[in-house]
Image (cartoon, rainbow, N blue to C red; front, side):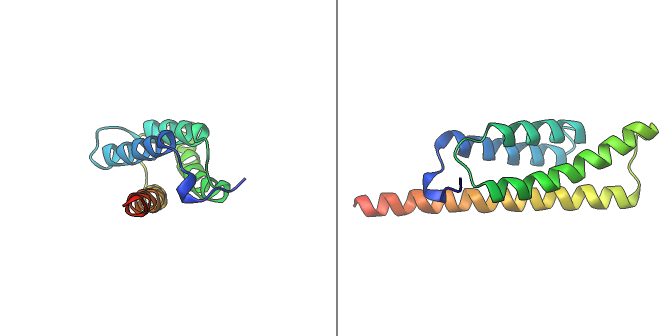
Length: 118
């Protein structure tokens, strides 16, 4: 089921905000990639009323993170090579863009609703 941005509930909005906080914490070296993978994956799973196409796009980038991390773990690598760093950076940025675009739609819809009530 695909729902419009106007149907996004406050619970889902909070999950999106938590995703962005996780990404920002990663970018500022407050959390590692394993925390990003766990948080984003868990938050995706609990979204209630959400566009399935959007979720699949996020999940595809999340999967890129999971693969890079799993390969590093299996090889006992603690530092990612340049190619892996680029893949991780790209996936993180794309997830952030997708989340930010959904939040913008939600915020615009809230503003439209307030204006309509005037």
